[in-house]
Length: 431
Image (cartoon, rainbow, N blue to C red; front, side, top):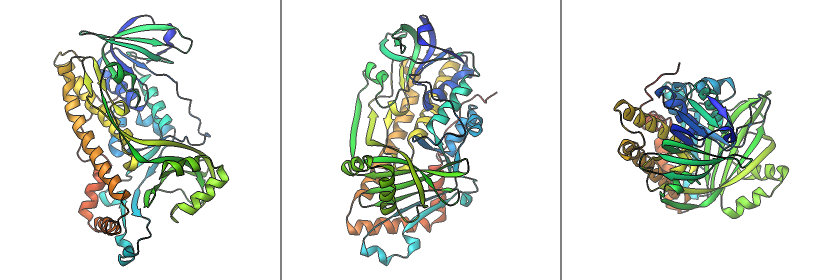
């Protein structure tokens, strides 16, 4: 991969320009590099280099086994392993309640627990810092001379014509250059400029809760479980992170009303640690210290189209989902897999990769699959947000029944791991 500053890039033709060199955009570059396409990746910010002594970042993702398989297939997983990742082998979901009716249920019927050994796997997934995944993908992309990373680069304008697209980009010093391409992939996030300039509409709905992400150091042993406890005001979640210098770290997620999240955001580390101890389940390991925090709104977004002539949207540019099940970037990687497959099919047939007819198979499949996941997450959110006492009883009984049905549990685990339904992998193996 060539790397250049946008001010050094002359007006040049590419087969494919990916706007956004984050996890999904850089994965597409790696997956398509063997196709022989001349590819440019535009990225606003070069990620900070990795150091083993650095404390964990706030932004992390729970990567499924299917995402791991995809990243292995395109040759990036080994670079993640060379940095750090934290496998989780168990997963648990329960409701922390004050409902007297639920005392009628035995403890084993108030929780659903999953263990990877029950389906013959060593793990259910990995918790990995987003920056590490991005660095690994960019390192893999560096193996390919037909992939050029242009950074820092900000997209200033996009012109779409019947036979090509033109992108005007500007670097941090204000120098401008123009790129032309057969296809623009918008991997530029929820506020996608590519989506806007392609005149693709967006359906959006804000949930009543916000979330606070908190990095902590905890005592005890390295945890191998991720859990989510539902409370009347919102879920509390625990995600283990990789040890650093023998110390244990985790990412906590606190869902609550915007007013509560704003209050928590204003607390200092010591006060927030005390509040966590009061509000989180007793399952939480003893905390040593709070290291950092950041809040975000919960917004469901779905592009009205994923493709238009010369444009395809992927990841957060196409959809954002309630993070309750941790499927965000996994859905983005599934977009990447389908788009890589679609474009390689078009190339084999000698089709123009930017033509709408070549792009529609990607949209047809992924829009339907993402809509289904959004509907499931909405049902999950609204079911557990309802404070009706009979409904609380029924959903807890449902969790308990699910815990007692091994066939059903195995099915759920395989689905959460991305193994069911199976997605095709890109045609080319890494070299």
